[in-house]
Image 1: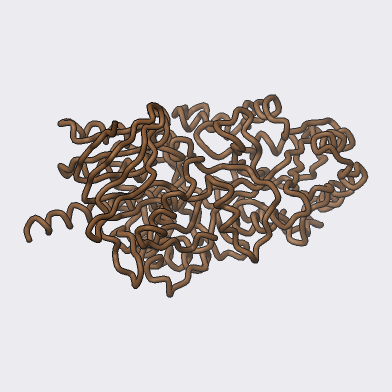
Image 2 (image 1 turned 45 degrees about the vertical axis):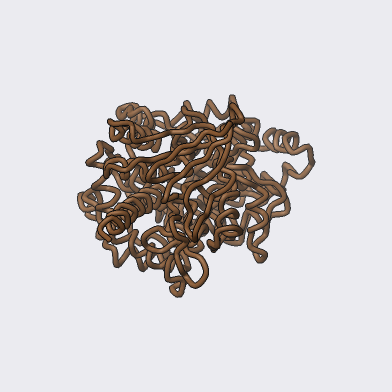
Length: 543
């Protein structure tokens, strides 16, 4: 038996880009079939778990903090930091579209949908040499991305007042169907009942996410000139496996471009209660922690410090002898600076507990640190550096950490403070002092002090691994989200949005993201695709 469904538009993938596309099409009166591989409670994909940071340009919130931003300034930062190839016309067009429209297409639109933002703009990805975000742009959704996702899902259902939406959970698409030169639907299977499905639609939208959920795909596309660690954690959605990318390229004539460009994170730990095999949590590394190699030596000559260039951190970590590094810090640093990206470990923001959030910000997040001490075997605590080195070796089943080397590493750093600030001569200290000039960073970053400062203990060592996350490349699309084939001709009937499209054009970020460009990229490509579909179908009727 085969189950057959027909609609105006078929959307493959129930992440945030697929949901927003469906929402906009439903509001325009279209019939929509939305197919997702996951369970109903996980509709929303990776966005349901994400933190909810957004790089937005020229917003009222920026203006209230007297941040002098503009699309022109943002585009300069974007192209320079991302090393975006200006000859890559489609990616460049999407970069321009992003900076020119993120305020209206995302900030204003979400506010109108009932989403609120936290009352401060954060400054991330400044660049090692000031070549990143030249001003703060990182807006945080109040309630995290979980609130965003649930709001969009509720809006989608509200727009379905006359049952124009067919929502299929636990269904996998195996093949896209092309007839007469145009994509006209797809075939697949109900993963729970094994019943085959035929989905007929004159328009198909790919919203399947990237490729980084598959380590096989990730490794195949890893750039040859970049070191690759022997093991990595997975911070992407496991269903973002690239299978349908290849279906589009191999059978429909589409193009996968920039597949080797990825936005991974350098400081992951295994999830204590994994949602899937190899599930990794991406920590937000403490700026004041010393980043060490597997032998307990400080990685240098330029020390690794988060918040400036995530791409560079990943390159440096991947070059190390072992697939892990260590963060050496103390309790004082941990409660002030340690954080984990995502909705799951940001309870105060996720649950909109503003007073408790402010309390944790001012007094330290003791609960998160204690939780990690209790739950994570990679989070080690000891009153002495000698005792800590023994625990580090026990974890790695080695004798890699010489306690004398670990002690010397700490002593060398602490010597910067032998005469107050007079002898500070360390790039990490300089970076911290620079970061603390911006008030939101000052609230979350310790004033530089000796690691062995009296009363700041106990000592903490965290074993970190590279964690895969987002694909910066994807299916090549034009500015209307149409999938492009040979000689930049559209594959008729096929659109692509979100991470599957490299967040627009097949690689709009280039080699680096200004961070927070992903959720807005999903929303903007989704809304743009919906408008294009609505416009094209209206034109077809008139003709």
